[in-house]
Image (cartoon, rainbow, N blue to C red; front, top):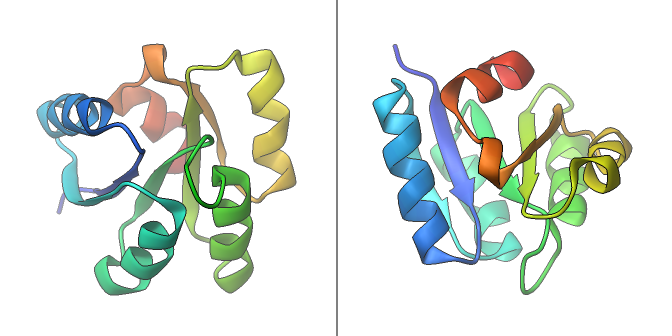
Length: 117
């Protein structure tokens, strides 16, 4: 059974690219969300194994979304992503319950597997 992923990012182009890349690596993309609010509604409905979560969202930032999701279920696998520098963002992952951080330019199925699977 393939690992399921919810992709949360406000840029449709990134969601499409991430879907293609992850599906090529054997992941099953359960859904996509463009905002933090959509993600909070989608996670209980879709029950993905991994939530790939952009830090910069238009409503709730990824840090807040991750905090809420991991408060509800501390075992939930959240992986943060951003175009921002890893030295700035990686420490934020630990503060919000995420498993880790992957820069968008380094996204791969293998990188997600190292953190979340």
